[in-house]
Structures are given as structure tokens and as C-alpha cells.
Length: 404
Ligand SMILES: NC(=O)c1ccc[n+]([C@@H]2O[C@H](COP(=O)([O-])OP(=O)(O)OC[C@H]3O[C@@H](n4cnc5c(N)ncnc54)[C@H](OP(=O)(O)O)[C@@H]3O)[C@@H](O)[C@H]2O)c1
Image (cartoon, rainbow, N blue to C red; front, side):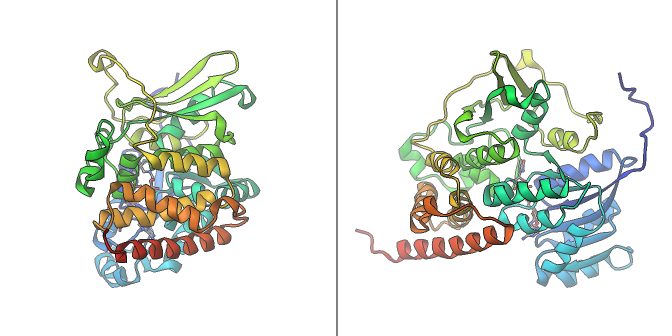
């Protein structure tokens, strides 16, 4: 048994955090600070919030900070003046942060915006701890090929995938018959159609078990998040679409199930606390790191429940499942259209059901079922941009149509 008091062996690992000011990024910062003897922070990246990024860079003793929004550059420079922390703004600065020497890069930018920096961070020997599922949805084939070609170690940070990664250690890949990902069901699990049609962004942002960034919280309410996660699992675990299933489990303690050919099932369980998959994804060679977390009190929980997902009320899940089964360019289109639709819902331009309607219209308009899978990350980004433009047109057309 490992000794808790044992001093860590080897040099500290150099870590870069992409999306450091977000929900996953901050949980990662907590884990890194709790293991200050094991990690040194090379770079931190944020989107817009220069003040928050500067505070984090100082607290973590980072060497470099990059903010994606050019306009936030002067505020970042001012906030870091005299600290000795170098900084930059704009795409080139984000790419510089991603490509600086590091042992592990935690990829937690939200959306397809995370794709280019995450791929740029790939190099022989590096570990990518992947939270950004949109990378794999948008460019799964190219992303996985690049990781394999460069000898990158991929570690799953998404709680379901991290649980599955651990559970898969109980046997051989060829003996797996199916994988189950659980879903909390989100805030609208029990809502009737009529009420759902009037659901507001504020209501959608009230997640029952997880505290997360806005985009993933809306995706959880629509169950698109689970659809994106199925596609993520499809690529991460080379699992055919028909052997991936979803089960709603409102308690969010069982995150994933591995079904074996002999009828055995291995489950991955943990409290709904993102620091748990993060600390696991940052561990090396199966040696576990401490985390100050209360043990799950199963007796107090009383019981677990499981139910099938309702793809009639939550059509985004059905659209994602269809896109996964179709393959080709469909998942790229699905992801890009969903990002635009979620932004439109948050801005009050469309209703809750409008998210699925918009994504479906974009899949049709782009003839997504017939598009080949993007062969490179650049191809995925081109298709992503074309889909965003087409989806905006769809939304404009609908907004200008007279109400009959
Ligand atoms: N939250 C969770 O519990 C959870 C669980 C599993 C997987 N994930 C996945 O992890 C990713 C991050 O989720 P989150 O909930 O942490 O999101 P979040 O709270 O919205 O944080 C997103 C982070 O990305 C930064 N960012 C946004 N646009 C950027 C850009 N163009 N370039 C560089 N940085 C940019 C943001 O900076 P600003 O703050 O300055 O905008 C922020 O640091 C998503 O892909 C999500 O699906 C999240």
C-alpha cells in the first residue's frame, strides 16, 4: 500500500491549464495547489477575463499567461506588471501557451475554440488531460490520429469517461461488449413538454448535481451533453455507436459501466465533484494522489435509481446519437450548430425546443449525413465555421418569418 506520508518521487510535473478561469480550470487549480510539491505551472490560458486570469497566474506561480481576447491584453499586462509573469493576448499568445514545454496539458477551454490549442499542445511524451469534449466531437478522427502519431497520452477528465477509463482497467479491450454512460437528467428531467417549451435560460442553468460553466450546463439540460459524451467515448475508447448507451441516474454517483463478455459489469463511482476525475487524470502509472473529499455515505443516500433517457422530450440526444451513427461530417456540424443554438437560447432569441430544431435544420441544410469526416483539424475547423454561418442564417430566417 502507498504510504500517505511518503515524499513524492521525481521532479514536479510541469502543467499548462487551457481554460484556467473556467469551472474545470479552477478545480484543476485547486488540485494543483493541494499538490504544490508535485506540479509547477508553466502557463495558464483564459478567454476574456484578464483580472481573473492574472489572479490565478499569481496564485499558481505560472510563468506565462495568455488571454484569447486581444482587447483584454492591456488589462492583463497591467495586472501582471512587476510579478515576473510573462503574458500575451490573442490567438498567437494562446498558441504560445499551448506549445510551451510541459509534461501535462489540461484542456478545459469550452467549445470548439479549444480544438486548435489542444492539438497544438500535442507532442511526443506529453499527456493531454482532456475535459474539452467538443474537440473529439468536432474532429474526433483527426484528433485521435494526431495523438497516436505523436505518442500523446490522452487522459479523460469528463467524469463519465474518467470512470470508464478506470473501470476498463479491470479487463481486456476485446472483452468489452458495451459501455454505459450515466446522465443526471438535468434540471428538466421531470418536466412535461408544455412546461419545457417555456423553459428559460435561468431555469436551464440550475443544474441539480453539478456546478459547471454555462454552455455545458445548458447542454446538460437538453441532454446534448450526453450526446456529445457518447461521441467522445466513441473516439476515446474506439467503441462502435451501437455498443454505447445512456442511462439516467439522478444521484450522479455511478458515472459509467463497463459490460464484459462474461456478463460481469465493472462500475466507476464517485461523488459528483470534478476534482476527483481531475486528480485521477493527473496521476501517473496508476499511483493515486490524495484529495480532501468526504467519502460517499451510501447508507445516507438510501438508494440509486436508473431510468431510460426520453429522446422525445430531449431530442438533442437523439440528434447526437444519429450523428454518431452517421459519422462523417455529421458530428462536426452537430457540435457547431449546437454552440450557435445554445448562444441563441441564452440570449432569449429561441426557446428551449428551438435548440434541437436549429441543430436539426443545420444538419439538413449542410447535408451533414453525406459529408466525409474531416481528415484534418484544419478541415474540421473549416466545416465548423461554415456550419456556424449557415446556422446563423437559419436563425435569422426564422426570426424574420411572420408569426402565423
Ligand atoms: N464544468 C464541468 O464540470 C465539466 C465537466 C466535464 C467536462 N467539461 C468540459 O470542459 C470544458 C470546459 O467547461 P467549463 O464548465 O469549465 O467551462 P467554463 O466554466 O465556461 O470555462 C471555459 C474556460 O475557457 C476559456 N475560454 C473561453 N473561450 C476561449 C477561447 N476562445 N480561447 C481560450 N480560452 C477560452 C474561459 O475563459 P473566460 O472565463 O475568460 O471566458 C474559461 O477559462 C467544456 O468542454 C466542457 O464540456 C466540463
